[in-house]
Image (cartoon, rainbow, N blue to C red; front, side, top):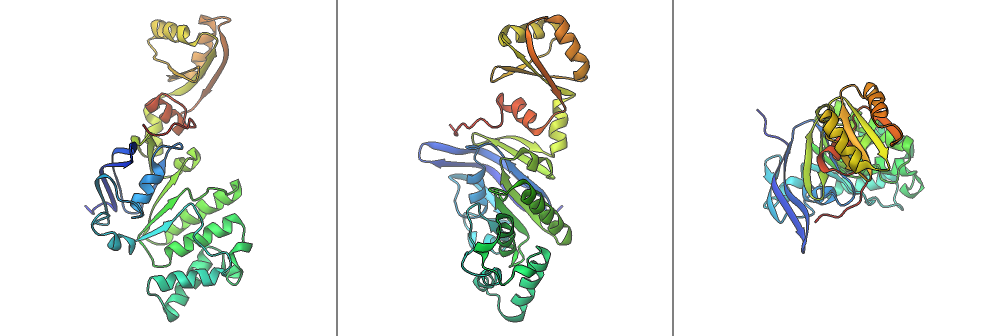
Length: 312
């Protein structure tokens, strides 16, 4: 069996007294689209910086294609394309000039470099913008230039930090379509950070981080299947007592999230009627839905995904 592209073992990282990552362990297989998903303060950007060799972990081990990021970062960099959240292209230079200068950094020259640039421009639908200054492009087109630049040296791993940050909904969809098509054309492993739950849904596997800890790791469908049945949200003026009575009557353990009860049932729509009949006048509203990655997060952490709590 081939060695995983990325191996992260018991990684912890501190910024002074603050712990950004706590004993994080996972692997990424070749050819996967893998998401590091979490709310602000979850630790995903710190982990991205470690994978990009921009940061050395306080403890633990990270190997990329068999190379240790601590002892051989220069070997890792030859195999990894990195797209930072902050722009790394020069707005005054044209698309072609940005790519050409990137190629020079990797020792690429002449006709070989020219062919690589032309291929990437065509692949990202940028050929007609090649001589245009990057500062004149839309946010979505600039992000395509960033990714093309990261792929110029033909890495086998592409890591991206919040690649859709600042893009509108249409540009976000377009970008993911380009990345999916890119993986289908050539062997490529893609790892990215995001706080958008819908972006995690479309990955092969997702690692969910919260307060520096890895709280879930699997394919999105498998994680949602763990929830079982439907998810029901119950709003009441007396959630704590209602929670206890639901437990006593049906043996169902509800989670209290921001004053709202969250519980699971195999046939949620049928159970709604039983709830209303059992507690007349005590329920303000009821909502039922199929499980989502946010429900996985609530199930594992006891709070909503968007809560912005820094690592402890």
